[in-house]
Length: 314
Image (cartoon, rainbow, N blue to C red; front, side, top):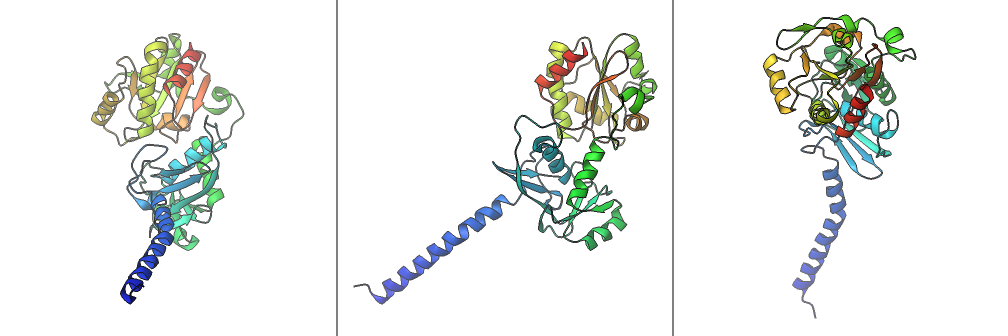
C-alpha cells in the first residue's frame, strides 16, 4: 500500500510532467520565433537587432532576416512576384518586430515606415510599428512614408525596379546619357562606358557596396566565371555608396578576388541617377551597340548564371 508521502510525491511528479509536456511546445515555438543569432536567409548576415528583423514561415521551413528589406526581396524573388527562383515556396505566415518595443507583430497587420533615414542592417530603412500613430510620430523624426503591408510591398517593388515601369527599349525610352558620363577609377584614370563600346567590347556594369554580403557573393562568383568566359567583356565595378573610402574598396576587391584587368569606378551620383540605381546589387550588360542586353536589380547570381551572362555578351 502506498504511503501518504509516496502518494503526494507521485502526484507532484505527474503534475510536473504534465506541466512540462504542456509547456514544451510553447518553449519550442518561442525559440523558433526568435531570430536573434540566426543567419539571414537572403544576405547571410547574423541577425543582431530584433527591431529590424523579420521571419517568414513557409510551407517547408522557417526563414529569418536581419532586415525587413531582405525579407521582402527574398519573398519577391522566391515567392513568384518577380523572377521566381528554381525552388519556390509559399509563405504561410510572417512576423516583423516593433521598432520601439521589439514586440513581435503579424507582418500583414503591422504599420510600416518606408524610406526612413534610419540605417537598418542592409540600408533599406524600413521600420515596423504596432500602431499607425507610432509610425506617423516616427516619420516626423526620421522621414519616410507611413503605409500598411500591401503598401510597403508595392513601394519596395517600385524602388527595386528603379521607380519606373517602362515598356520602351532602355536606351531610347528609358535610360539616357550614361554612356558618356566621365567616371573616375580608383587609380585616378578617367573613362566612360562608351569608350569600351567604341573598341568593340561589351560592358558588364556591376554595382556594389563593401558592406553588402550579397555583393561579395555575387562578385566572387563572377570572378570564377570570368576565368572561362570573360576575355571579351569589359567588367566595370561601380561603387554604390558615396561614403566608402578607396582603402575600403581596395580591401573589398581583395576579399572577392576581383581581377586586375577590371575597371573599378568611384561612386558617381549622376551614374546612379541616369540608370535609376537604388540597389547596390544592380547589374547591367551593355551590348556593343549601346543597348542594355541584361538587367538585374537585386538578388544573388551563381557562377553558372554569370557564365551564361558573359556568354550572351560574346
